[in-house]
Image (tube, rainbow, N blue to C red; front, side, top):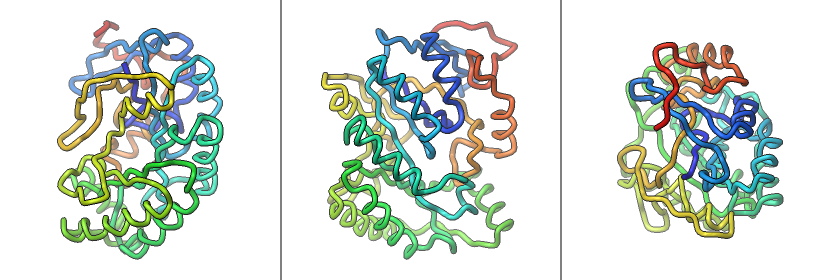
Length: 301
């Protein structure tokens, strides 16, 4: 079993102590996003083949990675580094620190451990095509040798995404737009060449309609990469998280509406005030990320 931690929230940035305690306990409880029913996920070495961590700020989690490594778990870090203006991301960490984190991953745990994510790509008056072109080129240069893959995706304008982008645009005085499919493909051709110049392959996450020569379908949960990290074969069936997803099967231990980063384009947060409130009420000693639900007793699945 591969455990994902987590595409629903940023566990490394905000919930590292909770994860460390659950790892030592050998399990955690998770609320299903489909109805809220709780289930148990084992975190024992006997049952977990490896971890995939997702984050925008790895630094608070580095001591936990040492524990994960000491216990013999292979892991991969999907590290989003976009260096957007604060009006879009709300991050308060230095880009230089995050770049340094990626280089540290390669030096201490191997080049296959870290995957750079330049996503979600948002087009706005703050981040037009020219911004992304030069920003991507600069970051790729900084990360050359630290990773062999960059994953990209373009913003999908769900109802909640549009609402949050519109609110931020009104508050901060910018405009945003969703380019055409042809414009995205044309831009991807440039990104493929930039990535190749810095010894990276470019993968497209969850948007197979955008695959062009030189770009591959992303498998963010990837037993092949985990096998490379661990030095032994890890297997998992292919199981998409959503339409167009190239991932393999995993158990995700995060919860939606619990990440307080404040990224206005985030799919995992409907309401930023709710996410901050849930984070503030978080108990790192609890079995659940956001507290045990009153209406269900714990059960395994």
